[in-house]
Each structure stands twice: as structure tokens, then as C-alpha cells.
Length: 142
Image (cartoon, rainbow, N blue to C red; front, side):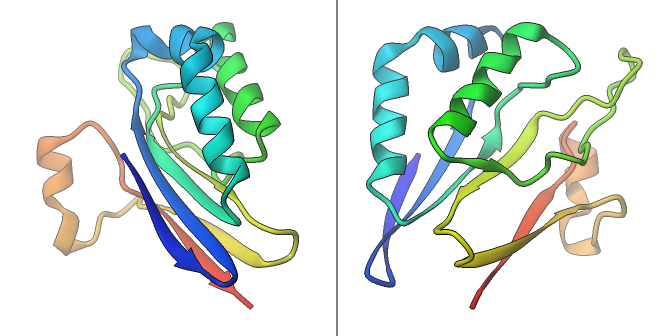
């Protein structure tokens, strides 16, 4: 899903992606059409928020590195670089699969990632129905 909004003197683009775990190498590393379309969308927008259940993790699999490298190469910043949003019972390490990446003009916005360790009552149903932990990025525009 991709939405464009008027923003300052240009456009803000919001992109949501769900990547099936088996599709990661194909989608981010080998799918030329997808890579080209995503790069063009990022380049034509002044501000981009890309988020979703990407099912990628540097600690899990080396082939996922190409996805992180590609997103970085097209100018997206991983808001959760130093955080983990999930711990699966079958792994020995934190498994993060929900991400938010942004592109912003230099010094145009500050962001603070937030991961819900304690889920607020209004979204507590997430624990019952999902294996994910809600993530949020608060973006401050000067």
C-alpha cells in the first residue's frame, strides 16, 4: 500500500509492506521491478515513511542483509536500529520483524522510536491476536 500526501513544498509518501519470510531475498534483492519502483517512489518524495511486517532480521539470516543494504542505499533510515520488537520462543536472540524506515531532508525532522513493552489498554487485544509488538515512531517537524 502506498499513499501520497501534500507536504511542505512537495509530497509525503507512506508505504506499508508485508513481506512473507520466503519472499525476502526475491523481493528486496532480486526483484528488479520492485526495487526500481520503490527507489523511484523514495526519490520523488521529500518525506517517506515505510513500515510494516518486513520479516527481516540481521541476526537471523545473512541473506536478509541485502534488504537492509538496499533500503539504506535508497536513502531510508531504520528507526529501530538499536531496538528489538519481538522475541520468539524458538530463537536464542531477539527476532524483530516490524520496522519503520524514514527518509527526511537533513535536519528537517527528529524522530523517536517507541516499542510497547507494556501495551496500552486501547490496543491490548494485540497480545491475544498477534505475535507482534506494536511499534511507533513519533516524528517532530521543526
